[in-house]
Image 1 (cartoon, helix red, strand yellow):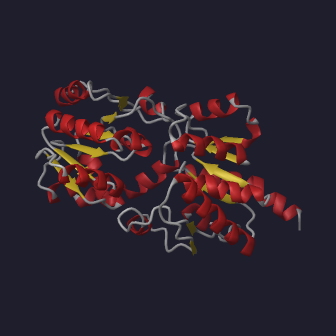
Image 2 (cartoon, rainbow, N blue to C red):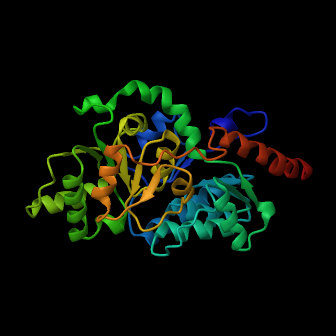
Image 3 (cartoon, rainbow, N blue to C red):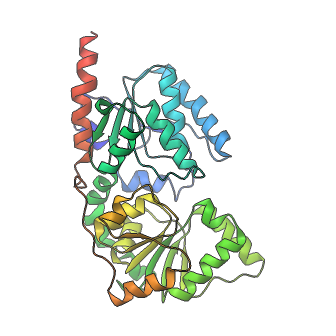
Length: 348
Protein backbone atom coordinates (compact mmCIF):
# COMPACT_ATOMS: atom_id res chain seq x y z
CA UNK A 1 0.00 0.00 0.00
CA UNK A 2 2.81 2.43 0.84
CA UNK A 3 4.78 1.63 -2.30
CA UNK A 4 1.73 1.98 -4.53
CA UNK A 5 0.73 5.15 -2.71
CA UNK A 6 4.12 6.67 -3.46
CA UNK A 7 3.12 6.68 -7.16
CA UNK A 8 -0.26 8.49 -7.17
CA UNK A 9 0.42 9.59 -10.75
CA UNK A 10 0.31 5.94 -11.82
CA UNK A 11 -1.75 3.96 -9.29
CA UNK A 12 -5.03 4.47 -7.47
CA UNK A 13 -5.50 1.96 -4.66
CA UNK A 14 -8.58 0.56 -2.92
CA UNK A 15 -8.01 -1.37 0.32
CA UNK A 16 -10.56 -4.10 1.08
CA UNK A 17 -10.74 -5.62 4.57
CA UNK A 18 -12.75 -8.83 4.39
CA UNK A 19 -13.36 -9.09 8.13
CA UNK A 20 -12.04 -12.65 8.29
CA UNK A 21 -9.98 -11.43 11.24
CA UNK A 22 -12.40 -9.24 13.15
CA UNK A 23 -11.25 -9.25 16.79
CA UNK A 24 -9.84 -5.79 17.61
CA UNK A 25 -6.66 -7.35 18.99
CA UNK A 26 -6.15 -9.34 15.79
CA UNK A 27 -7.29 -6.75 13.25
CA UNK A 28 -7.71 -3.07 14.15
CA UNK A 29 -4.39 -2.82 15.95
CA UNK A 30 -2.50 -3.96 12.84
CA UNK A 31 -4.13 -1.30 10.67
CA UNK A 32 -2.97 1.23 13.25
CA UNK A 33 0.55 -0.09 13.87
CA UNK A 34 1.29 -0.62 10.18
CA UNK A 35 -0.20 2.79 9.34
CA UNK A 36 -2.40 1.31 6.64
CA UNK A 37 -5.23 3.80 7.13
CA UNK A 38 -8.87 2.83 7.26
CA UNK A 39 -10.02 0.27 4.68
CA UNK A 40 -12.04 1.63 1.78
CA UNK A 41 -14.32 -1.40 1.92
CA UNK A 42 -15.13 -3.59 4.92
CA UNK A 43 -16.91 -6.85 4.10
CA UNK A 44 -17.55 -7.92 7.74
CA UNK A 45 -17.70 -11.64 6.94
CA UNK A 46 -16.80 -12.83 10.46
CA UNK A 47 -16.22 -16.42 11.49
CA UNK A 48 -17.65 -19.75 10.35
CA UNK A 49 -16.52 -23.00 8.80
CA UNK A 50 -13.96 -22.82 6.00
CA UNK A 51 -16.73 -23.20 3.46
CA UNK A 52 -18.97 -20.59 5.09
CA UNK A 53 -16.19 -18.05 5.44
CA UNK A 54 -14.82 -18.56 1.93
CA UNK A 55 -18.29 -18.36 0.43
CA UNK A 56 -19.14 -15.19 2.35
CA UNK A 57 -15.99 -13.44 1.13
CA UNK A 58 -16.59 -14.66 -2.43
CA UNK A 59 -20.10 -13.22 -2.54
CA UNK A 60 -19.25 -9.94 -0.80
CA UNK A 61 -16.07 -9.27 -2.77
CA UNK A 62 -17.76 -9.93 -6.10
CA UNK A 63 -20.11 -7.02 -5.33
CA UNK A 64 -17.13 -4.74 -4.69
CA UNK A 65 -15.58 -5.74 -8.01
CA UNK A 66 -18.84 -5.27 -9.91
CA UNK A 67 -19.42 -1.81 -8.43
CA UNK A 68 -15.98 -0.51 -9.42
CA UNK A 69 -14.05 -2.92 -11.69
CA UNK A 70 -10.32 -2.69 -10.98
CA UNK A 71 -7.42 -3.19 -13.39
CA UNK A 72 -5.78 -5.73 -11.08
CA UNK A 73 -6.41 -7.27 -7.66
CA UNK A 74 -3.52 -8.09 -5.32
CA UNK A 75 -4.08 -10.81 -2.73
CA UNK A 76 -1.59 -11.80 -0.05
CA UNK A 77 -0.72 -14.93 1.87
CA UNK A 78 -2.78 -18.09 2.22
CA UNK A 79 -5.91 -17.45 4.27
CA UNK A 80 -9.48 -18.13 3.16
CA UNK A 81 -9.86 -14.51 2.04
CA UNK A 82 -6.89 -14.92 -0.28
CA UNK A 83 -8.53 -17.78 -2.14
CA UNK A 84 -12.02 -16.27 -2.18
CA UNK A 85 -10.89 -12.89 -3.51
CA UNK A 86 -8.67 -14.49 -6.15
CA UNK A 87 -11.54 -16.70 -7.33
CA UNK A 88 -14.06 -13.86 -7.49
CA UNK A 89 -11.55 -11.77 -9.44
CA UNK A 90 -10.68 -14.50 -11.93
CA UNK A 91 -14.39 -15.24 -12.53
CA UNK A 92 -14.77 -11.63 -13.69
CA UNK A 93 -11.70 -11.93 -15.92
CA UNK A 94 -9.68 -9.36 -13.96
CA UNK A 95 -5.92 -10.01 -13.50
CA UNK A 96 -4.80 -11.34 -10.10
CA UNK A 97 -1.44 -10.83 -8.41
CA UNK A 98 -0.52 -13.18 -5.56
CA UNK A 99 1.96 -11.79 -3.04
CA UNK A 100 3.85 -14.59 -1.23
CA UNK A 101 3.21 -17.11 -3.99
CA UNK A 102 4.73 -20.54 -4.45
CA UNK A 103 5.09 -21.67 -0.83
CA UNK A 104 4.29 -25.35 -0.28
CA UNK A 105 4.10 -27.56 2.80
CA UNK A 106 2.84 -30.56 0.80
CA UNK A 107 0.46 -31.26 3.66
CA UNK A 108 -3.02 -31.27 2.17
CA UNK A 109 -4.57 -31.51 5.63
CA UNK A 110 -3.64 -27.83 6.06
CA UNK A 111 -6.39 -25.54 4.72
CA UNK A 112 -3.68 -23.00 3.91
CA UNK A 113 -2.05 -25.42 1.47
CA UNK A 114 -5.29 -25.70 -0.52
CA UNK A 115 -5.60 -21.91 -0.53
CA UNK A 116 -2.01 -21.44 -1.73
CA UNK A 117 -2.15 -23.92 -4.57
CA UNK A 118 -5.51 -22.79 -5.97
CA UNK A 119 -4.65 -19.09 -5.65
CA UNK A 120 -1.41 -19.65 -7.56
CA UNK A 121 -3.25 -21.43 -10.37
CA UNK A 122 -5.66 -18.50 -10.66
CA UNK A 123 -3.02 -15.75 -10.56
CA UNK A 124 -1.43 -13.88 -13.46
CA UNK A 125 1.41 -12.44 -11.38
CA UNK A 126 3.11 -14.74 -8.87
CA UNK A 127 5.34 -12.73 -6.53
CA UNK A 128 7.60 -15.19 -4.73
CA UNK A 129 9.69 -14.71 -1.55
CA UNK A 130 12.46 -17.25 -2.19
CA UNK A 131 13.96 -19.51 -4.90
CA UNK A 132 12.25 -22.65 -3.57
CA UNK A 133 8.89 -21.00 -4.27
CA UNK A 134 9.91 -20.49 -7.91
CA UNK A 135 10.94 -24.13 -8.13
CA UNK A 136 7.59 -25.26 -6.71
CA UNK A 137 5.63 -23.26 -9.27
CA UNK A 138 7.76 -24.36 -12.21
CA UNK A 139 7.40 -28.01 -11.12
CA UNK A 140 3.62 -27.53 -11.19
CA UNK A 141 3.79 -26.38 -14.80
CA UNK A 142 3.23 -22.66 -14.26
CA UNK A 143 4.79 -20.54 -16.98
CA UNK A 144 7.99 -18.78 -15.90
CA UNK A 145 6.80 -15.45 -17.32
CA UNK A 146 4.14 -15.35 -14.58
CA UNK A 147 6.69 -15.93 -11.79
CA UNK A 148 8.62 -13.04 -10.22
CA UNK A 149 11.16 -13.52 -7.43
CA UNK A 150 10.77 -10.31 -5.43
CA UNK A 151 11.73 -11.24 -1.85
CA UNK A 152 9.76 -11.40 1.36
CA UNK A 153 7.04 -8.75 1.77
CA UNK A 154 6.79 -9.41 5.52
CA UNK A 155 10.36 -8.23 5.96
CA UNK A 156 9.35 -4.85 4.52
CA UNK A 157 6.88 -4.37 7.38
CA UNK A 158 9.33 -5.79 9.91
CA UNK A 159 12.24 -3.56 8.90
CA UNK A 160 10.01 -0.51 8.91
CA UNK A 161 8.69 -1.33 12.40
CA UNK A 162 12.01 -2.15 14.09
CA UNK A 163 12.86 1.38 15.34
CA UNK A 164 9.50 1.79 17.09
CA UNK A 165 9.47 -1.79 18.39
CA UNK A 166 12.94 -1.27 19.84
CA UNK A 167 11.57 1.53 22.01
CA UNK A 168 8.74 -0.53 23.49
CA UNK A 169 10.71 -2.83 25.87
CA UNK A 170 7.59 -4.97 26.07
CA UNK A 171 9.26 -7.67 28.15
CA UNK A 172 9.73 -5.28 31.08
CA UNK A 173 5.97 -4.64 31.12
CA UNK A 174 5.43 -8.31 31.96
CA UNK A 175 8.24 -8.44 34.53
CA UNK A 176 10.95 -10.11 32.45
CA UNK A 177 14.47 -9.24 31.33
CA UNK A 178 15.72 -9.53 27.73
CA UNK A 179 16.98 -12.97 26.71
CA UNK A 180 15.55 -14.69 29.81
CA UNK A 181 12.33 -16.08 28.31
CA UNK A 182 10.79 -17.96 25.42
CA UNK A 183 8.01 -16.47 23.30
CA UNK A 184 5.15 -18.82 22.32
CA UNK A 185 2.52 -18.59 19.58
CA UNK A 186 0.19 -21.49 18.81
CA UNK A 187 -3.03 -21.47 16.83
CA UNK A 188 -3.08 -24.29 14.26
CA UNK A 189 -5.83 -26.93 14.66
CA UNK A 190 -3.24 -29.74 14.70
CA UNK A 191 -1.85 -28.32 17.94
CA UNK A 192 -4.86 -26.94 19.77
CA UNK A 193 -8.05 -28.74 18.70
CA UNK A 194 -7.47 -31.98 20.61
CA UNK A 195 -7.61 -31.61 24.40
CA UNK A 196 -4.97 -34.27 25.07
CA UNK A 197 -2.57 -32.71 22.55
CA UNK A 198 -2.98 -29.19 23.89
CA UNK A 199 -2.52 -30.39 27.48
CA UNK A 200 0.66 -32.21 26.50
CA UNK A 201 1.99 -29.15 24.68
CA UNK A 202 1.34 -26.80 27.59
CA UNK A 203 2.77 -29.26 30.09
CA UNK A 204 5.89 -29.80 27.99
CA UNK A 205 6.40 -26.05 27.61
CA UNK A 206 6.04 -25.55 31.35
CA UNK A 207 8.56 -28.30 32.07
CA UNK A 208 11.09 -27.23 29.44
CA UNK A 209 11.09 -23.45 29.71
CA UNK A 210 12.30 -21.48 32.74
CA UNK A 211 10.03 -18.60 31.68
CA UNK A 212 7.66 -18.17 28.75
CA UNK A 213 5.36 -15.46 27.40
CA UNK A 214 2.31 -16.61 25.45
CA UNK A 215 0.14 -13.98 23.66
CA UNK A 216 -2.90 -16.15 23.10
CA UNK A 217 -4.89 -16.21 19.86
CA UNK A 218 -8.65 -15.90 20.67
CA UNK A 219 -9.28 -19.38 19.27
CA UNK A 220 -6.52 -20.87 21.42
CA UNK A 221 -7.78 -18.94 24.46
CA UNK A 222 -11.17 -20.65 24.20
CA UNK A 223 -9.49 -24.04 24.19
CA UNK A 224 -7.32 -23.24 27.22
CA UNK A 225 -10.29 -21.81 29.13
CA UNK A 226 -12.22 -25.03 28.52
CA UNK A 227 -9.30 -27.11 29.81
CA UNK A 228 -9.02 -24.95 32.93
CA UNK A 229 -12.75 -25.37 33.57
CA UNK A 230 -12.08 -29.13 33.67
CA UNK A 231 -9.34 -28.70 36.26
CA UNK A 232 -6.22 -28.35 34.11
CA UNK A 233 -3.67 -25.76 35.30
CA UNK A 234 -1.27 -23.94 33.02
CA UNK A 235 2.25 -23.92 34.49
CA UNK A 236 3.11 -20.83 36.49
CA UNK A 237 6.19 -20.23 34.36
CA UNK A 238 3.94 -19.47 31.38
CA UNK A 239 2.54 -15.92 31.28
CA UNK A 240 -0.69 -15.90 29.24
CA UNK A 241 -1.28 -12.54 27.53
CA UNK A 242 -4.00 -11.06 25.37
CA UNK A 243 -3.14 -10.65 21.66
CA UNK A 244 -0.61 -7.88 21.14
CA UNK A 245 -0.16 -5.16 18.57
CA UNK A 246 2.56 -5.55 15.99
CA UNK A 247 5.08 -3.29 17.72
CA UNK A 248 4.69 -4.89 21.14
CA UNK A 249 4.82 -8.41 19.76
CA UNK A 250 7.88 -7.58 17.70
CA UNK A 251 9.52 -6.10 20.79
CA UNK A 252 8.92 -9.36 22.69
CA UNK A 253 10.32 -11.34 19.76
CA UNK A 254 13.46 -9.20 19.49
CA UNK A 255 14.26 -9.71 23.18
CA UNK A 256 13.29 -13.40 23.44
CA UNK A 257 16.00 -16.03 23.87
CA UNK A 258 13.96 -18.20 21.49
CA UNK A 259 10.50 -18.55 19.94
CA UNK A 260 8.23 -21.60 19.88
CA UNK A 261 5.57 -21.29 17.18
CA UNK A 262 3.40 -23.01 14.59
CA UNK A 263 3.08 -19.82 12.52
CA UNK A 264 4.57 -19.46 9.07
CA UNK A 265 5.34 -15.76 9.22
CA UNK A 266 7.12 -15.94 12.55
CA UNK A 267 9.56 -18.46 11.09
CA UNK A 268 10.55 -15.71 8.63
CA UNK A 269 10.67 -12.88 11.15
CA UNK A 270 12.90 -14.80 13.57
CA UNK A 271 15.23 -15.67 10.69
CA UNK A 272 15.60 -11.97 9.85
CA UNK A 273 16.12 -11.06 13.52
CA UNK A 274 18.55 -13.92 14.19
CA UNK A 275 16.36 -15.27 17.03
CA UNK A 276 16.32 -19.08 17.49
CA UNK A 277 12.98 -20.48 16.35
CA UNK A 278 11.40 -23.87 17.09
CA UNK A 279 8.44 -24.72 14.88
CA UNK A 280 6.04 -27.25 16.40
CA UNK A 281 5.01 -28.86 13.13
CA UNK A 282 6.02 -31.81 11.01
CA UNK A 283 6.71 -29.70 7.92
CA UNK A 284 7.13 -26.10 6.83
CA UNK A 285 6.16 -24.25 3.68
CA UNK A 286 9.13 -21.99 4.37
CA UNK A 287 12.10 -24.39 4.16
CA UNK A 288 14.52 -21.53 3.55
CA UNK A 289 14.09 -20.58 7.22
CA UNK A 290 15.48 -24.01 8.11
CA UNK A 291 18.13 -24.24 5.39
CA UNK A 292 19.46 -20.70 5.78
CA UNK A 293 17.74 -19.22 8.81
CA UNK A 294 17.39 -19.83 12.54
CA UNK A 295 14.38 -22.13 12.38
CA UNK A 296 14.16 -25.86 13.18
CA UNK A 297 11.18 -28.21 13.15
CA UNK A 298 10.70 -29.79 16.58
CA UNK A 299 8.47 -32.41 18.16
CA UNK A 300 7.27 -32.36 21.75
CA UNK A 301 9.76 -35.12 22.51
CA UNK A 302 12.62 -33.02 21.19
CA UNK A 303 11.48 -29.76 22.79
CA UNK A 304 13.43 -30.10 26.10
CA UNK A 305 16.69 -30.80 24.24
CA UNK A 306 16.06 -27.93 21.84
CA UNK A 307 15.48 -25.48 24.71
CA UNK A 308 18.61 -26.76 26.47
CA UNK A 309 20.58 -26.21 23.26
CA UNK A 310 19.49 -22.57 23.11
CA UNK A 311 20.31 -21.98 26.76
CA UNK A 312 23.80 -23.43 26.23
CA UNK A 313 24.32 -21.21 23.20
CA UNK A 314 24.53 -24.12 20.77
CA UNK A 315 21.73 -23.03 18.41
CA UNK A 316 22.67 -22.27 14.80
CA UNK A 317 23.07 -18.60 13.91
CA UNK A 318 21.58 -18.61 10.41
CA UNK A 319 21.76 -15.93 7.71
CA UNK A 320 19.26 -13.57 6.10
CA UNK A 321 18.14 -14.91 2.68
CA UNK A 322 18.69 -12.87 -0.47
CA UNK A 323 16.13 -10.16 -1.24
CA UNK A 324 14.85 -10.11 2.34
CA UNK A 325 15.96 -6.50 2.44
CA UNK A 326 12.85 -4.39 3.01
CA UNK A 327 12.50 -3.49 -0.70
CA UNK A 328 10.11 -6.20 -1.87
CA UNK A 329 7.13 -3.85 -2.25
CA UNK A 330 9.16 -1.55 -4.49
CA UNK A 331 10.08 -4.47 -6.74
CA UNK A 332 6.43 -5.53 -6.98
CA UNK A 333 5.36 -2.00 -7.95
CA UNK A 334 8.06 -1.83 -10.62
CA UNK A 335 6.83 -5.11 -12.14
CA UNK A 336 3.22 -3.90 -12.13
CA UNK A 337 4.22 -0.63 -13.74
CA UNK A 338 6.08 -2.46 -16.52
CA UNK A 339 3.39 -5.13 -16.99
CA UNK A 340 -0.07 -3.83 -16.20
CA UNK A 341 0.28 -0.10 -16.95
CA UNK A 342 1.44 -0.41 -20.62
CA UNK A 343 -1.46 -2.79 -21.34
CA UNK A 344 -3.94 -0.31 -19.90
CA UNK A 345 -2.49 2.61 -21.80
CA UNK A 346 -2.44 0.54 -24.96
CA UNK A 347 -6.13 -0.21 -24.56
CA UNK A 348 -6.97 3.49 -24.46
